[in-house]
Image (tube, rainbow, N blue to C red):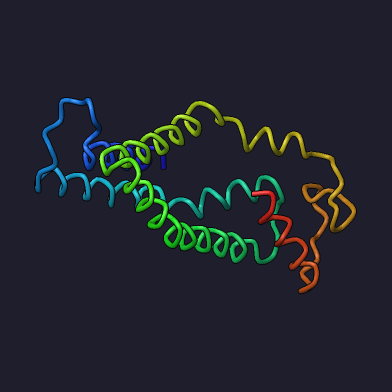
Length: 168
């Protein structure tokens, strides 16, 4: 995922290109290279995202019936909400500051995301589980990591699924 974030950030730097860098002005080969890097980088981020979400959720909550469904729905709804909102935000930003600066801003956001994931949150899942260990589970009244079976009723899954989605 980190390599994909880096490639996507680099693609925005090339697509703009970033003002102030010694890059040639936008040309067809440079734009094609930037778009190929963006596509490959996006795949490297999106494809392993569900597996990463599953690993963190299993570490935090243990096995819960329907966990894959909740996480898949969360991932897909976030992806498509971004696909609906970001073109409008990108268009407004491009109108106000120009295309090159817009690409620079989006590339900077992706680079910041890369550095936070790479250096800032290295022990996040383990720390979150360690902080939660032994605490009571508000749905069942006991810890989810103590080996006690989790109810699979529809009412329970609704409560548990919304709590999982809210804490991710």
